[in-house]
Length: 575
Image (cartoon, rainbow, N blue to C red):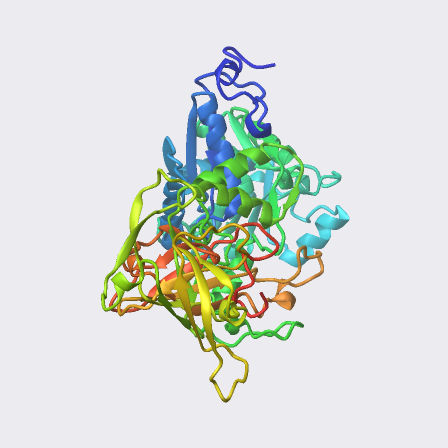
């Protein structure tokens, strides 16, 4: 049952939105949730679910959201990761009520560890990792389990100081239950030595608490009322509660939800770090998996690569934060672990910009075919460098902002479209009107039958009904903009990896491709992050604006469809 104040705030407004049921024991105005990222990588789409659920419940109950950096492993953590996690939270519109670090509480962790030792509820152990693993599997107690508390305290002090090389072999373990069916209760490690300088505290500490030890301590100290954890931590819940009880800390409720997974995607930060370290164009040679794909051929740019499931990678590929939030709330707090198809997410994402993204024209630069026009409104354009007509930025919405569209008596069309044209055909130049083809040129001696040019007459009064051929085009003017269109696919080819399978054996050799396109001059001023549609080509996000240093770069945004918008050539060789 809900506590005082119950779930009235939710009942008035949000209810069980997207399968997010009321929090057990929640009191309006008193709920405190927390998101504890480790600064050992950038946030990915799995983290997005965690932080958005924590934020959802904090706001639903008019409580507080804490963001706490779990900086307990200096060997993996960097300022770069912490800075980018904060950047990602800002991108997602997450505004925590407090930001803290586990390292803020290291002093208290040391005190509580000593209390456990003094009470005989912990011991120091120098058993090597492999032997310890075997003993825990066999439920065999360590030879040091009956250690005198005084000796344990002395060894722990030496571990903290780090001056004695022999002390570094020791670790602190909780004394719980080696006979338990729950492996996490078989005397887990609570502290380990580590001489690596910490990115915040430098060399002040020589030993660090484990996440399993620091989490129940800091959750209690910082006032967390509900610890939201994915179901992969199920077995650790008993350990969490044992530690809080043994240290006489305020109890924190645990609320579980199912982890979200995506097919053809790795969410492990360790694996993503492997891509960063081994798959950059200039990275050192690394082992080639069974798939015989050279990792360097993937040319991964970093944690922000558009193929990465990181927040920054998703943004570059065109994900809107509104769609991401809707998607995660739809998943809700269900305890089921789900494997999602990206198609469903991309379809939801498309709904965010389809009604408003301005439409422009562009054609593949490689084989663009000239189409000379006459008749209708064309004679008035002959000899002009900057003739234009006014069109709605979204043709299906007459109320959308009007814009100027460059026109000319010479236009370029897609080579695939030109190849299908015959004399007498009526075609529609999209966003302009009907043209009747009067001449088809096939004068390339090296490629008999290849259409090298077209001529046609504009028919402004003609009906567009029953005309099937609809062409995208650009006016052939001197200020046409050259754009590089980039398309991305999954980094791995297998939808779901089995436990005994190595992701390196399933690297995708066709995960990226690019092609030059000629686009309207208006796109010369496109800014990074803006989304436009190239008619018949799809929606694109501006990755790099046009500049003296390089061309305009556009990233194709997937739309969730199994087939492309048209039969036109694409950047990826297998599409």
